[in-house]
Image (cartoon, rainbow, N blue to C red; front, top):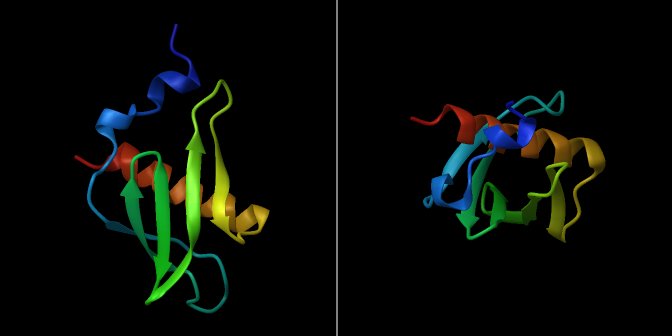
Length: 92
């Protein structure tokens, strides 16, 4: 039986180089294109030349995203996490 955690790539399958994720968050273009720099289990989030914060993916029974450093509100955290998940699921 497949569970939702079966679809989560293990650390050995995560990207090791920086990549961009894009999504619509605001009516303006703020935060719509972010640079994600993976480092071990952390993901450094950069917009333009500004470090917005660092996220950490929890890999427990209920996978979620946590703010390790920075100040992301709940909805922005969820959208960035979903964009990272989408990138990881679709990279070839």
